[in-house]
Length: 226
Image (cartoon, rainbow, N blue to C red; front, side, top):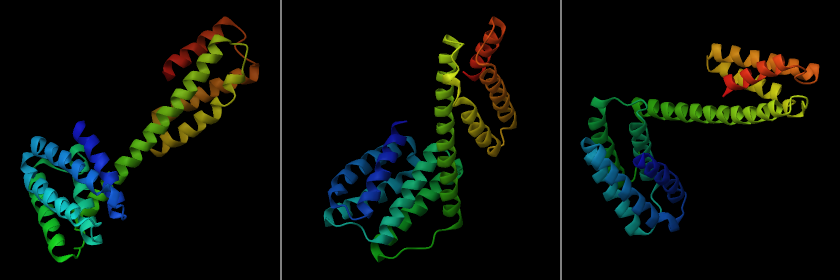
C-alpha cells in the first residue's frame, strides 16, 4: 500500500517536472528515492530498473533543468510500468524481471542519446490496461457515492414516511445507476436497481408510506441497498 502511494505521488510530481517546473526537481528526487526503496524491497528482480531510475533522476536534478522530452517520456513509461506491476494490471510474474531490465536499458539509451524509441506493443497494451483500470475505478467510485446519497435520502424518508420530499431525486439517481451497471454488463444489479426505482416511484405516487406494511417494505428495500 505504501509503495502504491509513493508511485501515485511521484507520477504527479514527474508530470510537473516534465512540464518545466524546476521547483519540483528536488521533491522528485526524494520521491523517486522512496519509490526505488520500495521496488528493491518488494520486487528485488526489478533492481536494474531502480538503479537506472536513480541514476537518471540524479543526473536531471544535478543539471537543474527539466529533462529532455525523450527522457521524460521514458521515465513516465517506467513509472507507469511500476504502477501496473504493483496493481497487478496487465503484468505477469515471469515478465517483471525481463521487462524491468528492458525499461532500464531504454532509460539509459534515452539519457545517452537524447532521442526516444517507439513504444513496443506490450507497452501500448500496458497503457490501455492502466487506463481501463483507472476508468473502472472512477466509475465504481461514482457508483458508491450515488449509493451513499440514495441510502441517506431513503433513511430520511423511513424516519418520516409521510414526507416524500427526500425521495424526489431518488428515481433519477437509480436510473443513472442502472445505465452504468448495464454498460458494465452487471445485468442482475441493473435489474435490482430498476426494481428499486419502481418501488420508490410508487411511494411518490401514493404520497408516502400510508400504512405500516408499505413502510416495512420500504425499510426492507433500504436494507437491500445498504
